[in-house]
Length: 628
Image 1 (cartoon, rainbow, N blue to C red):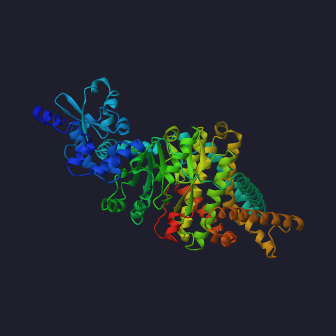
Image 2 (cartoon, helix red, strand yellow):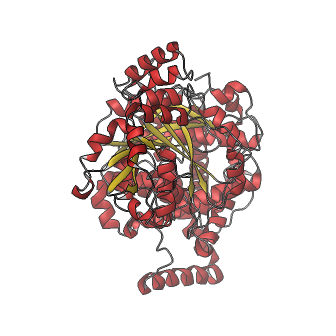
Image 3 (cartoon, rainbow, N blue to C red):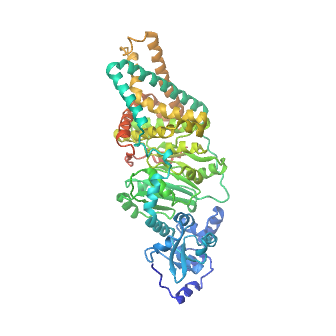
């Protein structure tokens, strides 16, 4: 066991510094590191937001963390321990649970004779925290260190364990990780269905076509009906003129998973710096995979603000965004936890609106979802159609689902949680490639509601053909996995959600999957519109064929109507003319779903990463969304 070699005289000297008890601001002022005006302003801001003045100084860049640490050491007459100079004793570190240390910003560090030194990054809270120590540690002496040193040591000691737990923290009954484990009964059922479909395809293809047509029409009617219900249930979100914030502002942690994002990481820092929420109450965490040396090298060359830090996720069996978020969640300190993507440009006042919404929402609102839009909708035809689709989803369908009381499948970004909601649901399913939609359903099953809030984040529209197919394929694969996970025990799902929300899950997920999969069957009605023969002409009379065609065209009209209503709720008035062209856009989803089916069979947990940074904003205003 390592023991610090420090004489009693040296320890006494440290405790008897003449600056002991002097305010930290005064000490920094004496050393010429801040001005008197700085201290007065910081004291006023600290009182306004309910944060220690040291946090405000560091967040505002008035003094570095190291300068503040040295001043705190003189104020408290305490030792400063730094990991690179005096590494902690691993035997001593284990005296307190790692989660307790992360929560309270402390770390048992070393022994000096028979006395234990416990380092803290929050010296003003040490006495109250020490009361929660085991009896054997009650006589511990306080030392000071940086929070980064505590986190790095805990990651070094427990990182592998944390990484493993990040993969399996969601109970197996709520996870898709056992997808490859099939019972004899399920294999038999799948075999019978596959054999039956193959037999029909060979010996009675028109019967198979008719079955597919029936399913396709049924899903089309249900999907378009759901859109209409959502349209009439939703209303354009109204933004409060000024967010109503509590007297003491909560800390908000935001996780931003990055993986090979060197092209966009610097831009991200610039965009997040526009947030107007007090930086002393912000805890922005850039989450890197251990193997991502490219992005890590870029961030090492970048001067990060004090309210932004990097966490590296150790390697594991899967490399997915939800696994990375589960791992880094332990290192957050916020009352609310949010998610951004690497390419996001959130509204400057977005965090204020998050805090406002949670402060005044009922306690069972565990999650709020913001509105996603694009800053490059005019890049090409694909980005225009993508922007129209996003408008329908985030401005019509999701608000409507929430209003009528359905479970809301979340978007992967601009989504914020109460910490207790994430704890109750055990975080994200590390094996689900649409962890956001899955978590939305699990929140509902655990008794939490999701609400939409009126703040917009703009991101980059994926507007290249094959990357779009790969991204949509991952989403559809995840939708399939999510439906399977929650529906494999339908009676339990019914008990957890109740009849209405159970019906909503089936409607939303099944109609999405069936519509994309069987869309080619519906396309056959374009033959009738063009005056060409249809495969079912010998079996159905002309009035029936005309009625089915009218039904198909009516569904197309409903889709156009809903899309026009959605675009009217955006600043993108130039997209109205492009709404009718979506009939050529959605077939791309059919290509994607067959790719998703193949991957589900061959590589269900593969995360097909979308690369960003290929399309610049149309205008600066489009990125900042000053028009909303």
